[in-house]
Length: 256
Ligand code: PGA
Image (cartoon, protein in one colour):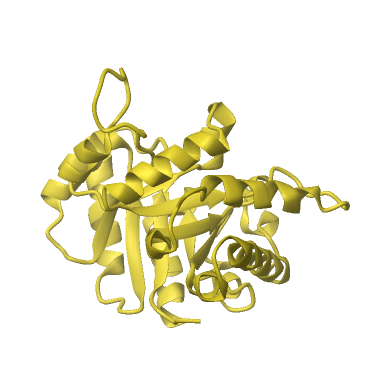
């Protein structure tokens, strides 16, 4: 398996409330991230802040990401944001299939259409998967398998280098580090994800795919999630709104 930088992605969700706060947070995160050579830091901010964040940030350490995009590039789609519009604001990453969007209405097939469009337009896609709950019969594994197979329908092996799989069990999102997955269980889930990727693609693609974890990552569990849990990075929600906490997470990722 190739060893490269850890990928730490901030998912600000629908925060903060003002551009002033967004700029402040972004610049502080930029400071925390600077000089960390073993970690790649991405901030996925709400659409309305992206241009301004791009404009004010002069450092080279942070990349900008969006939290969604639409599967068409042109046309009458009130309220949607096109891949080209996003690209023109300097965004290179996009979160797709986040459970909070799936909870609203998004199906595996919608996520798949968005993934294909995003890849076509040259984005790096943070493809979120994860089960709502666990059960003894292993139905959650079947659920995850379907999300992967349907989400990656007609995504070529070549394009897999631009896919980051973010395993985010819904039961672990938005809580505290005590509620996050155990490293052992995460390790098993990552193996399961790679096993599915072998069936869709091949062993090399499955081993090379970048798999990160999201769901109540905080400074207290970050180290074990990367080491014992074998995640190659994080998708961080609430802790990414706290500069000191997020800064510690970045340092941990840098040192592992
Ligand atoms: P959380 O969110 O870190 O607050 O659990 C993660 C996510 O939803 O991406």
